[in-house]
Image (cartoon, one colour):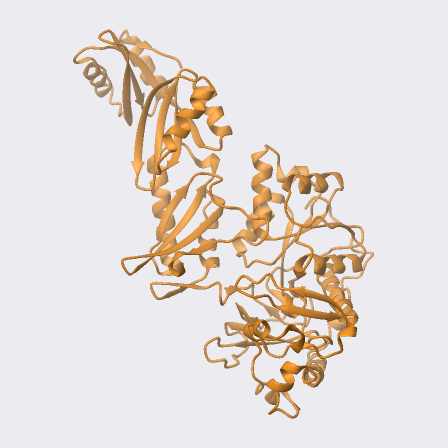
Length: 136
Length: 439
């Protein structure tokens, strides 16, 4: 199963750089980042090349963090490929709570990160349709 | 409780005769005390002048005509103006932790120290402290009365005392562990901090220690905070009330029934007044506590306005002690702040937020004014185990806390969640309210 890290942050300057600094010092490569904001605070979601370690170092640095299950699926980097995945999930009556992605190889491959209720089930569905599900 | 102590071999009261004294007799002692205290006070420069129009007092009615003594009187006059005996008889001075402005000085004769120690012993004995106990005193020693006051009381009982003082949490925990501390005396905010510290280090507050009792004082705190502390440590937590002007800790103390604090009426005469009009209120009405020392030799204080808000509990206590109880202090009259014209006590806010299990033990109240409007912000730390990374969950919690606060304090606050460890924790008295309007 794929993992992402959610970090609670106050809405203040310097919060992101504190996180990236810690990751850098620990030689952790940041793959993707997205921010949900709610006025005075927000939640930063990140994916790295070593999520368990990233979770631990952030926790040690007194961050409010949580490790969550997500579906990480590889898709071709071309028009319509996200749509295909979304369509499959729609047909299976699955709600996407949150989604973001990043390109791994320009024009060739991208990675899609999906937050869903039943991560395992979605991974199965996508695997059965020939998608490569990545385990971070 | 960790280990049940066998009390069957020791009596239940430190001074049975005085603790169970018949009501009528207690009133006689009080009137005697008031008359002699008045006479003694008039030997001091301050009261000689203040009471120049009062020849004698014969009864409570006469007494209630005397003017109040205030904190202002104490800081504005020469400290020695309050001495009613020669300085050669004074053996100790303490000073209040003065949150505002100048210090108040309190003088003790040898006998005053003795009486005080005995009263504190009475308090500690009441909650089950015995000479077998190891008593770690985590209050500041020195001018503050909290440290030495409980020290002398515990010594009177015969406890093994660890005069640890405040701060240096790691050392405190080491002492607690190695010396098998059974009783601690501490501020509630520092005890919360220690709980946090222990959990942070992956230890269990319940399993690590031999603790059975914590005496908490020096800061007003809520019933919820007490219950929280009791649950975290698996011990009994008792509330202690005192103020340096009335010797220090031990003026009133909870008995094992934990429903109000017995105020030692053989030592202090209490009145509850309307803080605005100064009118003496009926038993059971809420107002400002006014105290008169009945036995103090060095520095009698007459009708001293404590600034603390409480009420007298009318009902007889199941423990049998006849000294009337006061309710847990609601706040200092000067702790109260006014936002949008509404009077608010920090304790009201504390009670609400501590009821949320998702909330950690630190909070801060910030009052500011923008474009002529008061803004009340309550900053709260979220508990680590609660955070699941879901922003909606946090938003809902924020909304729930805001609604709950609005219902209790009648002002809609801004509820802010802050990162763990960002709110200041202090080892002494915690500063919970920051009023930026005065700056």
